[in-house]
Image (cartoon, rainbow, N blue to C red; front, side):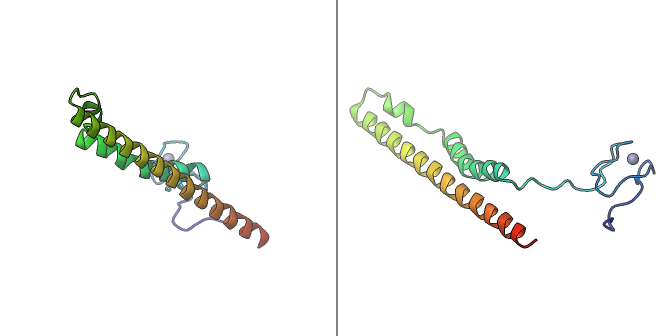
Length: 121
Ligand SMILES: [Zn+2]
């Protein structure tokens, strides 16, 4: 069994290769694209970084001033800083909670799909 787009010989060094190989063991030429990992760990990593990354970028780009305000000697500025801290903590908790819930749902649907495949055998 050999997919038609994968050559039986390496296009670079012309040594024989097998259809399941991603690289030629002789010269290192890429023979086909390696499949992207789709398991639960890969999903958690991708989804969590998709949610957390914009938040980190937001803090970086805006150079969030909450810490500076919270340390201020002016009571009004300090209150602003405390409110900003509360908002960012609530936002982080909500983000982590949603990341957990959505990842859990993605894992459950993955398990469901695997179980459905196995019961079809
Ligand atoms: Zn080769």
